[in-house]
Image (cartoon, rainbow, N blue to C red; front, top):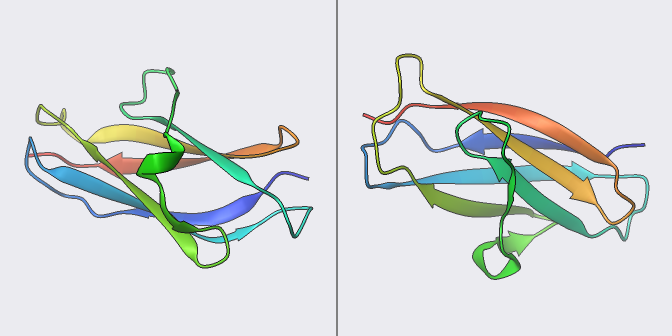
Length: 101
């Protein structure tokens, strides 16, 4: 069974400013699961792991991490994808529209 969560972001924002992604209500098949966070920031299909030292909070209460978009988004926003992966390789993707002006 893949992990589940609620994912939100703080957009819209302006180019050069941070957008914060929040992952809350995390659950998985193992109550002691550890999670890895990967993000495709622009919807290009290229995922990057969010380094653990850039993740604040914990999986019980929720975590957050930020990203700075250097350029304004195309019309309709960036189509970011946050991937929540547990230590067993199960994952769930969460689409996020991020508007950067």
